Every structure is written in structure tokens, then in C-alpha cells.
Image (tube, rainbow, N blue to C red):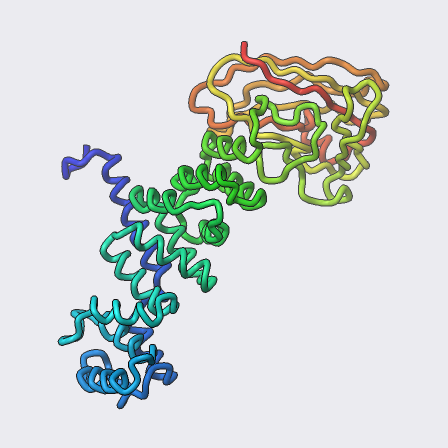
Amino acid sequence: MSTTGRPPWAVAVSAATMVALVAIALALGWISLQRNFDRACELDEWPNFSSCPKPDAAVAAQVRDLRQRIARNPGDVVPYLALTLLTTQPGGIAPLDDEAVLAATGKLAGHDPRLLRVRASRALQRRQWPEAVRLLTQLVELHRDGPAAQALASLLAWSDARAALVAALQPDSHWVEPLLQALPASQVPAQQAMPFLAQALTLRLIPAEAGLALVSQLKAGGYWLDGQALWLRLLGQPAPLIYNGDFENGFVRGGFDWELQDAAPARTGVQVQQPPVAGAQGRALELAFNGRPLALPVVGQHLVLFPGSYTFSGRYMAQQLRAGAGLTWVFTCTTGGAELGRTPSLTDTQGRWQDLTLPLEVPANCGAVLMQLRTQLGSDALAGLRGEAYFDGFGLSAR
């Protein structure tokens, strides 16, 4: 308990709230109405101001000129928008009635981006989340407003605002993908966005690439359960503890599939393929070593496992393999790096398939379990391997 009598989690929540406020403030820098006022005057975007004064000088003259222009041409939207900007100055501009000005401007320029920004700013300041979401999504869909998309992403840090975002999701919503693209810059943890993401996935509003990018973000942050939940929603079906352990499917980058070195065989020392292989049940993982220094790990996968006892099983075959002390599958905790076990050395089998088995004990606070193919000795990887190794039928069962 802190000296203020607040528990640590309350302090953390307060800190998170401040981060969210700062993120929203940064995202809405474009709604800085003082800056808009000055810039509009400089560029002569509004009616001919008598001068370019600060908001606290000669405002009455500005209001008078704008009202005269409206009286001459009631259908001219520009002076209404200028009055709208003037109403947003600190403390308001007497005797303007900001609500009346907004209502009149809305009749003439309901979807003008400048008016939408003013209204969005007011809704955010008053924490009127459904109204703010409605206006920001209009800016994104109608005007491709990038800062508005980032503002939407920043709102995911607030539970009430997040609920408004979820409620705004519709099968034809076109603002979801821009929001996802802005999510990393908003600095809102993807974990906080999970309720929104789950609903968006249900409505098929998240493209596969964007969904996989979010899974990668969750993995990088150590949110393993959330990342796997999003991964399973993307798959649309249950998955075994070792995904694609029969190697029948092509590898999916960014999810909980097999992870490979992102470089050419000349740099990694191995070529990875999934051909049909005699003795395998269809396709298998083929590793063709070329004698160059081997980048480690050769291949790996993150496994999300609850604490308990497991048995790893699989099959292995090698032809003309020169690998020094041999290869091995190593299982470690992502938290702390504790090794849970490794298979015996895998050496040349002269083309015969052999069974693999390994008992594993997964402790609490392990995070995810990282399964990687490595050389038994680091010096063997530096010297390079030659020959071919094949793997198939990997599985993990609880004991």
C-alpha cells in the first residue's frame, strides 16, 4: 500500500489513464483550434478578416464582419465555419452562442471536415464517447483523416470509450483498418484492444495481414494468452498444442506457426521446404544444409501451455547428415529462459525414420514455451552442416 493509501494497482491504473490522456492529446493535435484560426487567417481561407489578430484582439470586429456576410448571403457556409472557429477560443466569444452557431453551421456544412473536427474536439473534452466515436469515424470514412484514425486508436485505452467503439462496429464499417494501422503509434497495448478486436473479427472487418500484425504485437509484449486467442479467431478453428506439427500447411508469418530465419539459404546455411516425403504422412519438414555457417535457431515455434506435465512426440529421418554432435529440439521458458528439456542428439539415420519422444514439465510463470531446433554444440553451427534432415508428425499431449 502506498503512502497515499492507494493500492499499487490503483496507481498503475492512474498512470495508464494519464498515458491515455497524453496519447489522445497528441493524436488530436490537428484539432488545435487556435492554430487553425491563425493558419486560416494567414492563408486567407476564411472571409477577408480585417487583420490577423490574436483571438483576444479585434474579435468583435471579426464577428461583426462575419454576421454581415451571413446577412448578405445566408447560404454561404464559409462565414458560418469561421464563426464556429471563433466559438472555440478559450472562454468563448461573447455574445456568440456556440451551440446556436454549431447548429446553424451543421445545417449548411454537416460533413465539412473542419466542422467535424470542432465537434469531435468538444465531444472528447466532455468525454461524450459515443458522439466522439461517431464524428471521428465520419472523418476517417469520409475524409481519410489519419489523425482521426489515431484518435480512435487512442480511445481504446479507456474502458467507456472502448465500449463505444465496440458498439459502433457494423458489418460495413470502413474505419477499422485505418484504426489498426494507427494502433502502434497510439502506444495503446494491443491487450487493451482485445474486446474491440474480437468483435471486429466476428464481423470479418480485420484483414488477415492486419490481424497477424496484431498477434505479433501481442507476442512481442508477452501477452501470450491474448495473442493465441486472437490467433485462434483468425484461424476460425481449434488448433493443437503444436500448430502445423504435420507440416501439411504452408507457414504463416506472424502467428503461432513455425518461425524461420528471414534470409536466403546462403546466409542461413539451410534451405527449408515442405515436400511430400516417402515414409512421411504426406508432406514433411525438409532441411537441406549447404555447409555454410548455420544461423540459429534453424526453426522454432512459441507454444502457449498451462503449467503441467506433457509428452512431446514426433518422427525424424536424416540422409548423409554431417552435423558434428548432432541436432536437438530444445524447449525453454520465454520468462527467465529456463530450459525444460531437449531431445537426444539427432544424427544421420541413413534414410530410416525414427521416433522422437520427450517428457516435459512446464512450471508456473514460464510465459510461453519456446521450441527450437538447434545444434548440440555452438561450434558445429559455426562450422556449418551438410546433408538433409526431415521431421514429421510433431505433437504434444498432456500427461
